Image: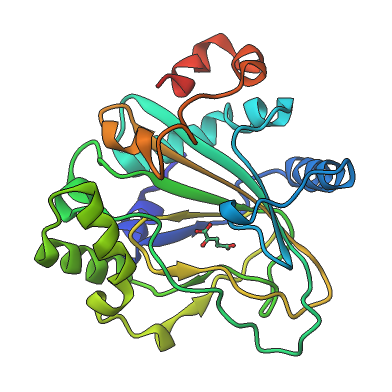
Length: 266
Ligand SMILES: O=C(O)CCC(=O)C(=O)O
C-alpha cells in the first residue's frame, strides 16, 4: 500500500491517522479478548498504567491473538516504512479499555508526556533509532470518548529541547523526560482529541506530546497498542526497564508463522 502521505504527516505532525486499516472482524475480536480476559479475572496493574477507569492488559500476552496481530503484513509494512527499517522487531503489545467515568463533558487529559526520551539524530537516522507506536482504535472514538489527545507538531519541540539538554546517560535522559513538557515550551491548549472510526490506526512518534483522556460518554473505548523498532536500535530493547520487554512468551513464539519469528528476536 502507498503510505506516502501518512509518512509525510508523521514527519511533520508527529502522528498520522490511517483510516480503515483494520477489518471490523479483527476489532471485534480485540474487544472480545479484552472483555473475556477481564471477566476471567485479569487484575489491574497500576504500575503499568491501569487506573480507576482504565484497564491495561500488558506484555507478555499468552493468547493466540497476540501472534495474529503481530503478523499482519500491511501493518508490518507500515511500521517498517515509518521507521525506514529493514529488520523490524516487535517491542511490545498492550490492550486497553477506558470505561465511562460518569462525569459530564468535557473530557480531561490524564497527563501530557512523551513515552521516552530520544535525541534528534535518533529520530532522523535511517533506520530510525526510535520506536514507532501504533494505536488500533477498536470502536468509533467520538469527542469525550477517551480519545488520545495530541499536540500536533510537538515532537519537533521536544526533540529540540533534548538537543539543547544533550543528556549523556540514561539517568540524564529520564531527568530531561520528567521536565520535557516545560522544556519544550509546547502550548498544551493546542492539543486536539484524536477522534476516528473503528478500524482506524494512529501512528505516533514517541516524542509527540500526547495523553490519554477521561471517557465522558456512555460507551467504553477499546484500543490495541503496539510498538516496533529496527533491530539496529539496541537501546530500545531495554526500555522502559530491563526485563519487562526482554522476552516474548513461548506460546507466542510457537504461534508465530515461521517467517515472522525474527520480529520476536531480542
Ligand atoms: O490511552 C491513550 O490513548 C494514550 C495512552 C498513552 O498515552 C500511553 O500509553 O502512553
